[in-house]
Amino acid sequence: MEKKQFQAESKRLLEMMVNSIYSQKEVFLRELISNASDAIDKIYYKALTDDQLTFSKDSYYIKITPNKENRTLTIRDTGIGMTKEELENNLGVIAKSGSLAFKSENEIKDGYDIIGQFGVGFYAAFMVADTVTVITKSLHSDQAFKWTSDGADGYTIEPWTKDDVGTEVILSIKDNSEEENYDDYLETYRLQSIIKKYSDFIRYPIKMETTKSSLKEGTEDEYVDETVEETINSMVPIWKKNKSELTEEDYESFYHEKRYGFDQPLKSIHINVDGTIRYNAILYIPETVPFDYYSKEFEKGLELYSSGVLIMDKCSDLLPDHFGFVKGLVDSEDLSLNISREMLQQDRQLKLIAKNISKKIKSELQSLLKNDREKYEKFYQAFGRQLKFGVYNDFGANKEALQDLLMFYSSKEKKLVTLDEYISRMPEDQKYIYYATGATNERISRLPQTELVADKGYEILYFTDDVDEFAIKMLMSYKEKEFKSVSSADLGIEDDQQDDQEENNEQYADLFSSMKELLEGKVKDVRLSKRLRTHPVCLTADGEVTIEMEKVLSMMPDNQNVQAEKVLEINPHHEVMTALQQAFNQDQEKLALYTNLLYHQALLIEGLPIEDPVEFTNNICKVMV
Image (cartoon, rainbow, N blue to C red; front, side, top):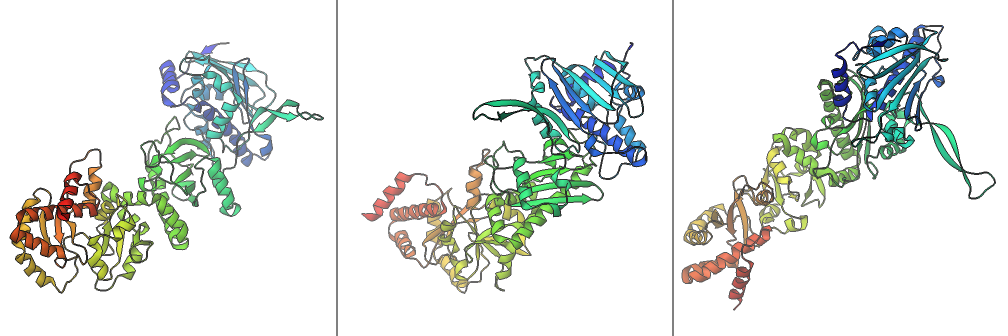
């Protein structure tokens, strides 16, 4: 029996494949099961063109057998087997794929596909085994053969005895090391979990013998162990079935089986595409926010399968950030994978799938908004913040795609409304979409800045999320209507008293100049207010940075101390105006007291901190005595 050398770059290439290509050792089982599935598929394709060959699916299976005593793990299939020449070509030449050759010689149809393409998956066995033995008998030969290798040093092939057609791959599992517990790969429960993770949807039964305990007949508390053969994998994936065969309960069961969440999904989306690129997908919109969703630990992404074999746990490229809450999987036969089958060789196909999935998610959300408002609002309470972040993120690249999904609380409707609904109710003379910002809806409703807009009968959108105003600044307008904060310097509302206002500003110019000096560095200006009706004072902002944006930015880790250009507005119709004028004419010390009190009052209304609370309380006492 002659020992032969591998015909590729031998030792270095094999060591690279074993130590570098695969990120996790457990994938060796995925690779060997995929090869076994291919071997059975090859008989199926032969049967399509050979009248003398019949294919009975019940006769074909894969069996996994661990033997702790001998430290061996056997993967047996009832597939097509290999001749001596095929052993030489497929296992003796590293990186030559018998499956790829078979695909090129045979037309693949009927929804089946040969998984293996690169011819290196078999060698993943050396990640966990010192010695690999292959015993095989081909459908086209009466003689069986045994292939044995200890690794890069080479291999031997010798005639062997085997009664039935098929292949057995026998791994002599390595001894434990400090880095790896190889005993795991002899444990039934561990092997079952690997099969369920990577190969649950291989189309043939993957069988194992398991031990079951049952009550001994005729006894009440005596149990006996019984060894039974079980099929570990599900075989037929739910996404390959017709939608008409499935119920909502089926989708919900799958959601929980895959452990996508402990909640009930709000919406399931089943996609079957057979076009430029073929793929199937099952997607879910969860009901509740995962506990780590807004943390660095959260990983977005869909499970990615290739012909029913798990390639990636979290393929983040399949989902944009704004739809990162979506759970589920995608399975495609058309992906160009690298040799480890853990990464994509090129991303053109993936980009096309991701683009289509994003459109589908948006379409389903719009449908939910239109046909089941209550359910959509439940979704929006959980994930609306992420949609708004999507509008702001990437310099507004996705704002047009997301704007119709946004909702905000309405001052008139007292509930969440869409931008389209707001626009549909706007009076003809209204120029802008008005909004106000604050910590809660209740606090916003009491803001002095809302008085003029509310008196005009205009609807106001309430912004309570820290991202809201940033998103709207990026959106800029909706259906040609610009957004306008109720705290903006110019509200765009015609006021009959505007001329009188200009005269009053000139009349009080010296007073406001003195107040501005007293508040130097704190406000940009002091002026009469056009918006106040009953409240004495408020703060507004000139420029793009609003007071609410300043508060959000101040909490950022890399705070750049961005400040809004604050303006202190005084209500000309309030009694404080008379008190200020009198103090200006008669008592400069009292003017300073009143100015500081009004400024701090405006800060409190905005939810801004007071620099010196002790001084503020002392000033209140001065007014009282």
